[in-house]
Structures are given as C-alpha cells and as structure tokens.
Length: 156
Length: 138
Image (cartoon, rainbow over all chains, first blue to last red; front, side, top):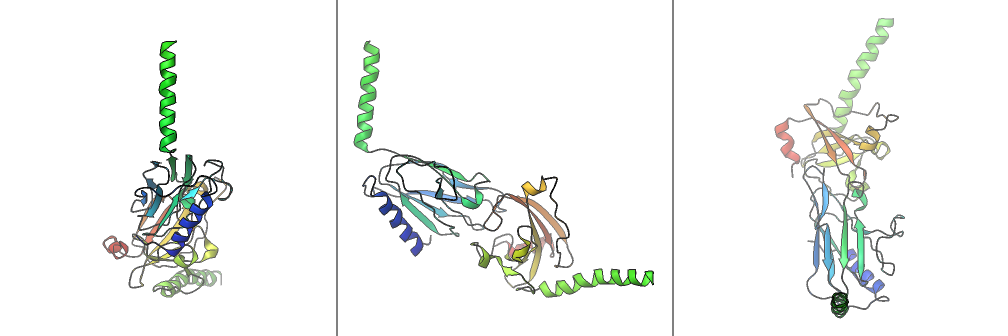
C-alpha cells in the first residue's frame, strides 16, 4: 500500500470538515474496504460492499485492482451533481482516482447511512454503503428505551 | 483507363496499411497517438493489455495500440460502449486499423475505466499468436 501525500491531506481535510458537527477521536483499527476487479475488467466491486463502523473509526479504501483506477466518492451534489445519500450535516468526500496500491481514508463524524460510488464504475454497479453507528451511551440509552417500551406493551 | 484507376485504387488500399503498420510497430507510434496513462489516471502497463496509446480524437472507440514490455505492438483494441452498440441510430464506421496482420480476435465486456467510463466491449485484434499474449499478461 502506498500512502500518498495527497491521501494524507485529504484524510485531515475530511476530519477537520467534520469537527463542526460531532467531535470525535479515532478509535481502534481502521475498517478496510478493498477496491477489486477481475482480470479482464468485466467486473469491479468494493469488498465489503456494506460496512458498519463505530463512532470515530477510520475507514480506508485501498485499490487492489492491478488493471484499473477507482474512486470512493460520496453521493452528494458536490460530486458531479449526484443526489444526497449521506446524512444532511455530514461532509462529502471524493478520493479522486486511486491507482493500484494507493489508499484513501475518512473518519465519519456524523451518525447515519452513507452511500458512495466509484466514478468510472457507477454504471457498472460499483457502489457501497457505510452505516456509521451512534455513540455507545446513545446506543445503550436506545436499548433501555426499547426494553421499557416492550415491557410497557406487555403489561398493558 | 478505368481498369488502371481501379488497379491504382486497389494498390493504394493495400499499400497504406503496410506503411501504417511500419509506423506503429514499435512504441511510441507515429502520428497523433499519445500514451493513455498520460491522458487519464491509469497504470502505465495494464495486465492483459499492455502499454496503451490512443489518438484522443478517436475516443472512446479508438483504435488503442497495445505494446509489450519491449515496446513491440501486440494488439489493436477498440472500446465500444454497450449503450452505443444497442442504439439503432449509432454505428462505428471506418475505424482505423493500422496494426497490420491479425492473428486472432478477442471480444469481451469491460465494466469501464478512466477514459472510457461507461460499460463497453473490448474488441482486441491480436497481432501475435495466442501463446504470445503472455507478453502482456503482467
């Protein structure tokens, strides 16, 4: 894997862009998404195509396709007028083209569902989804509320 | 006279491709061809294809000229968008074929790549034997 200067700058940019929303530090190992393609280029995909990440967890895409360039690009009007398919307060990102071995990372600071695509391969169905979970405290609170509602329904 | 003109025309048809083949046999090819990796962000050498050159004015169809690691021409490639192939009002006519003798042809689907982003078909005219495709395998 080649960590380019451009990649590092973009990582910082996305993190800084998100600080106005929900401040968060990086927690644990990065979640890895591979960009893959078969030998003749007839099929391309993200591996995994769907991913759940914890608050503050970094997501890193790496191009493992020796014969192609790929992007990880958020569905957002800033990216060639695409529809918004990320949380309203979240900052969009675009990795630009990654050559084989190059990588790009973001840390999502807003809870929600993020859809993204590969610029040259969107028509071929190379899309992915990230579910960025809420805080542990919020999650525990939600579970407690759910239990209380369930118990209340059982009693009534 | 009519026969002479026809003979000249036929001679010209066969002479031009031979001359063109000489001009493109080694990388870089003559004319307006440019290295694809300098036009768009793609690896300089594509496994299975080789080092590609194209005249940007001919995009997306090409021809793309593909060379091995020694700079020898191995194939001529046309990239034809699937949407165009299924459009009754579109066709690809008079595509240049400067590479000379063709040994065999491969046709297969490609999901897209920088330069030809839409799903398309690769039509590969191999100028080398099938066994020599290994020259551009990696």
